[in-house]
Length: 162
Image (cartoon, rainbow, N blue to C red; front, side):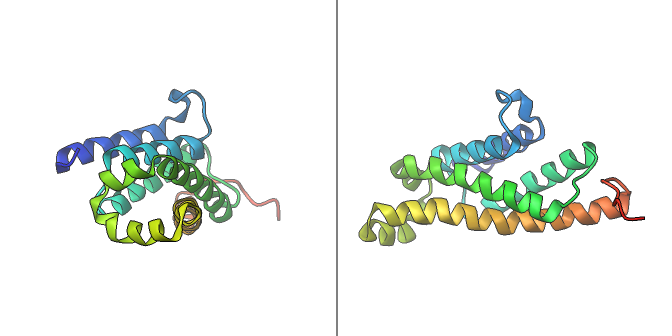
């Protein structure tokens, strides 16, 4: 999957998976997304500049999904938590298959060499901890976008304050 067309097709599959989570064994959205991104980044690899675009597609898919379900009461914290959880599963798959991840992502080799010298616990921290941290920040940004969309569209839970 080194050519751009194949990466685009794989990325679209990940985004579609996040839009229809019951199609993937009824797993929660965060687990489904984390596993899909973990598999995509580990076994197929994404260029460093392509991965943020795929996450943007996932974020847009989540926003549309939650808007179609009536929105969320606290979208920023809710999506920060969900995306952090997604990062756990993405990081776990990358860590358990670390040699494959490195082979599929040659751009990562310089960073990976430093972790290999430090030991496997640093690899786990980098993959899982990085996934949680980046997921929480990306989720908060997605939550802000959802909050804005809820305000613009009028979709979302109404405050109980009168």
